[in-house]
Every structure is written in C-alpha cells, then in structure tokens.
Image (cartoon, rainbow, N blue to C red; front, side, top):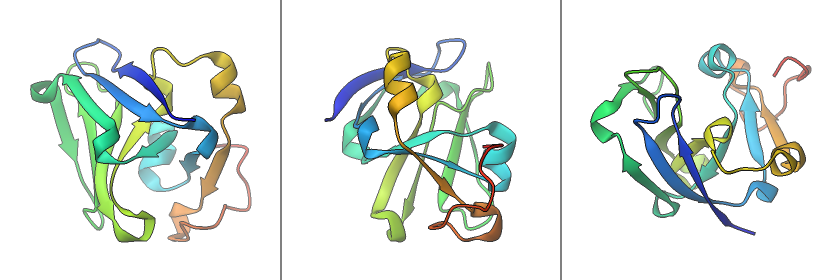
Length: 134
C-alpha cells in the first residue's frame, strides 16, 4: 500500500515528500554511480513526488545516456533523489533514496523487497551473479 514519506538530505536543506509503496520493491544495482554512492532507490511517478524545499540547493550530474539526472545537495553532498525518463521502465520517474526517508521504520526497511540490477554489464533487468556487496 502506498504511504506518504518525508525525506531529506543530511543538512536538511533539501526536503521532499513521496507517495511510495515499499512492498512493491526497491532497487540496488552495480553500475558505476550506484556502486560508489551505495544507491538504494524506490521508483515513483513524478506526480507522487513533491520537492518541499531546496530546489536552489541541488546540483545535477549526468553521464552516459543522460537519461537520468543524479541530484545532490550542494551543501552536504547527499543524493536524496534523482529523476529521469526511461521508456523501458515506464517513462518519467523519480528515484527516491530509501536511506533518506526520515519517517520510515526499521521494520519497513528490513522487509522491503530489493531487486538487484546488473548495470555494470548493461543488463538492467537481471541480477548480477553476486549481490552481497550491494
């Protein structure tokens, strides 16, 4: 069931709310940026995401296909969410950093299903052979 969560970066300048169903699953992948940032995301439609504060405090980074905008707070460096448009996953999306949800419970985190993706080998719809490091 979808639930409204509130989230933020570390310093609190970037704040958002998102309607997320953690039981629908979350994702971790081994692509170069997720590996370095230890990304753990939940995908929501743009209509289910509201940036409450900090638009001017965000910096953007894009690479590769430029289909994803990796946003981070220019003060504390935390990536609390990103956005993009990938037709293979349903078009426009916002990827909420699950670790940045301020009012999520430990039980919700520990029971949220995790789907692993092999982004390192551009095999996004399959899990890598080893996932323990993710």
